[in-house]
Length: 114
Image (cartoon, rainbow, N blue to C red; front, side):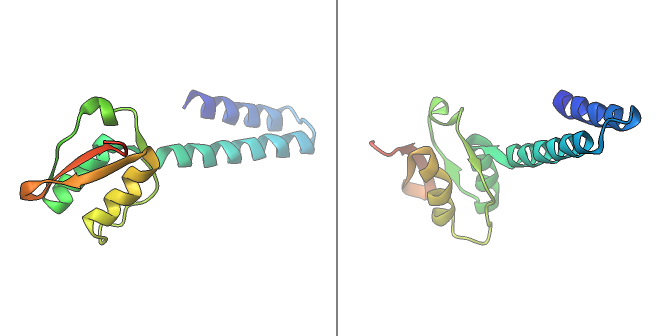
């Protein structure tokens, strides 16, 4: 947020003090690039939060070690019309994880090697 304010302030000041058009365009391009990066970061979701949402949507449960998932994120969209197993494959594979289906419809995210 501070970075965004700084960029907008710089853009405003460059226009206000009449800096050459090329510099103003460069600053505007920087603002646009920063917005794209921010949108990409906003699209990133922690795996723990995503699994909690999937629990509610698919009325299931996940059993996992918190340390295994706490620093992992997923970037992308989840189509809730897909089967749960398809979503889990798409979400867990980039984090080098897989899932096991346990009794009673419970899922266990785990490392690829276990």
